[in-house]
Image 1 (tube, rainbow, N blue to C red):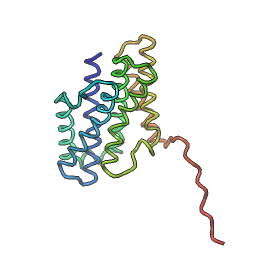
Image 2 (tube, rainbow, N blue to C red):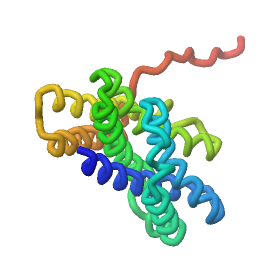
Image 3 (cartoon, one colour):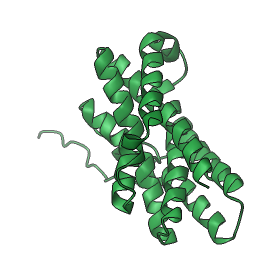
Image 4 (cartoon, rainbow, N blue to C red):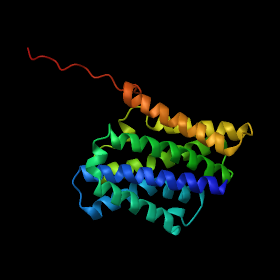
Length: 209
């Protein structure tokens, strides 16, 4: 379980760092700003999770591999951001992949620390959305989780699959893959089809008499 969580955590770190660094390059940040954004986007959610469940000091701070993975992804995005931008919605696709992996990892780590299933799913969601929130705040924009199509809901859905698999005694790896796939597909379909949660009804502007 620990090896599986570490592998998924590092892969998610790379993907989320790539999304954060690409967003920074798009906003014309310098190389230091891009690297800072890569690390913040990749590790903020995991740091928040570890602090709250008592896994201190957080793995993103004590394990050099998380910083190295973030830096590598940041350098790739800084050097080849023009090629990355030619992809369709690159930031959103990388972000969806990172969201799926981190939702699964956060849930599995919370379960390993013997949290109850409901809280474990919520901590999985927190792990998935935390990095994106910090990234958007550093870029001075409304966090994607508050305005995007089924963002936190997708993370919670993937986390719920992991919790259910654990409750029914399913093997950890297939459960993790199913949870990540569910989250990723739901998020991508929401992007493609514009699925959204209900929003407040706005009165049309009144014409002056």
